[in-house]
Length: 260
Image (tube, rainbow, N blue to C red; front, side, top):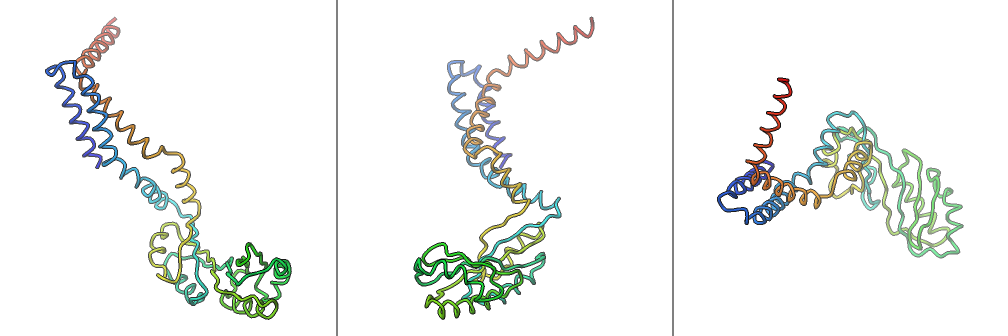
């Protein structure tokens, strides 16, 4: 891609070299040609590489770092959560798997039940550490590390129906998977399809990549820069003789100073 872009710049340069034959009145033509060709080259040859730059940087960070990344998964309790977690643990590169927050969808929860459920939810199962109702049909349940989320939901469902008549429609378990940074892509590709959904990849490397993305200029600015680069190349080609004479003059003056 870069070679093709350089060939386009070479075309602009060679066209600009013809200006002594074409005439200086075509100055604007060369400038316009350089800008348009630069934009086209930037859009079709440089931009695709620029899009891949964060991935290339990620690969470099991974190959030189022994740090860990965290893959956050969502697993529905409609599937076998325990089996899905067991399958994830078997993947090479996975260092630990912990279930955490559970998003629970329920039938309608009236405001009169909100405080009562939140204050008493830990009695439903000893592995529940807290619960918070965030809407009329959704609550977040925190469980102890190493808990069995399927068992927790079953007991919570039975308790809620018994206490309030509110039923659990379904629940999503958030699972944190700690992996070797060099194996992130392989682990993601080997995750059980249809059982888990990747919601986030976080860690020191992802922070570095995000910082890089926030630092580098936007793709549109890079394409615009390529257009101006084409203009510069055109100007250099147009005035190459003057530039060479000027450089020779400078070199001659430097030589004279050395002789003195």
